[in-house]
Image 1 (cartoon, rainbow, N blue to C red):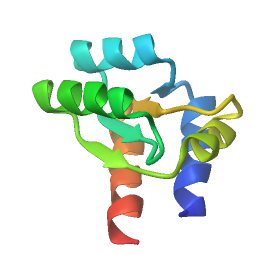
Image 2 (image 1 turned 120 degrees about the vertical axis):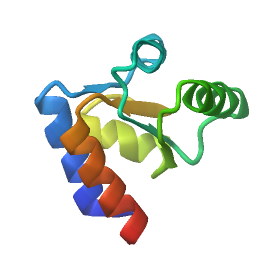
Image 3 (image 1 turned 90 degrees about the horizontal axis):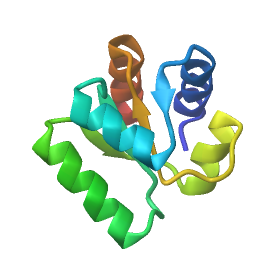
Length: 101
């Protein structure tokens, strides 16, 4: 997995530009605050469907990235199925890192 992207996620968390709890993620998507949704490749099927449907409905870019343990470790938390980036700059940089590698 791209270490730069995982490091950038940690930086974004410290800057307060992420949400990682399910309800906070969905609220950020619904409110338009979400600029990018990162979904763990090993997330459960129900979670994948819920996040894919919401991101499509609210037109939030979605990238499947890492696994739950890696996302959690990058944030310094327990494993996470999804992370929402709420800052345009962090979102743009992550998109670049994850789509060019």
